[in-house]
Amino acid sequence: HHHHHHGRPILEVPESVTGPWKGDVNLPCTYDPLQGYTQVLVKWLVQRGSDPVTIFLRDSSGDHIQQAKYQGRLHVSHKVPGDVSLQLSTLEMDDRSHYTCEVTWQTPDGNQVVRDKITELRVQKLSVSKPTVTTGSGYGFTVPQGMRISLQCQARGSPPISYIWYKQQTNNQEPIKVATLSTLLFKPAVIADSGSYFCTAKGQVGSEQHSDIVKFVVKD
Image (cartoon, rainbow, N blue to C red; front, side, top):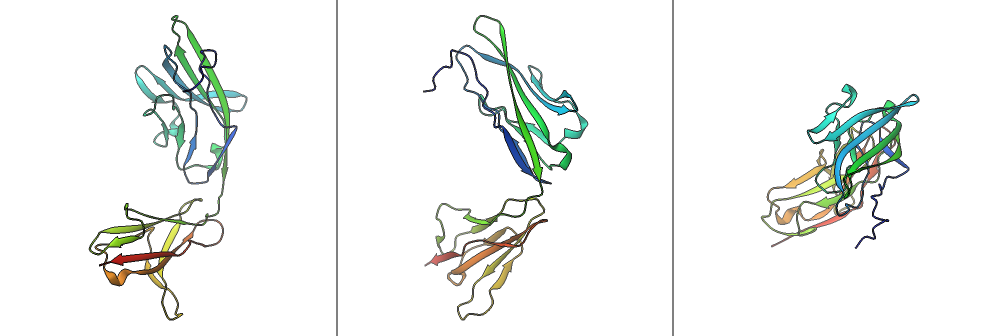
């Protein structure tokens, strides 16, 4: 159980977050909900010159985005109590700034308490990371024949990222290209699909990256 910090809510916000240019970023802002404290207002502000400007407001009437620049690409968490993190998509270089998360609570004695914390958003042209491979099933990489299954290739970096799937050949020949999407779909998987697969990812920036090799086994 969380210790109550002298019965006052505390915002947890990282000092800085780096997001990929053209990609999406999450600016975390969380607190432990306290007995008797009701969240009445959430604001996100951004530093414009010397003044902070409100870009998002959540009050009793709902969520309001205050600046056209953020319309359609700004979202603030609401599903988990105490999580008011800001998601910003399609980052531009000029989104770099200091962002303030500000929360107001009604206290048990009917007063209001306000807390705010600042985080710095950096935007970088990020080269592609080594892709990871996951499967869309609970079976892992060994599956029964006849099952519909997909292997997913995922890399971080500045989009657009293009993916290619390869299947290795037994007799030292060049691997065969089997898909040019992030998802390799077997519908359904047959025994001949068994083999060693890998994917590559190439982004706007940096060189092509290869995933680890996955041994995919289809059993009778």
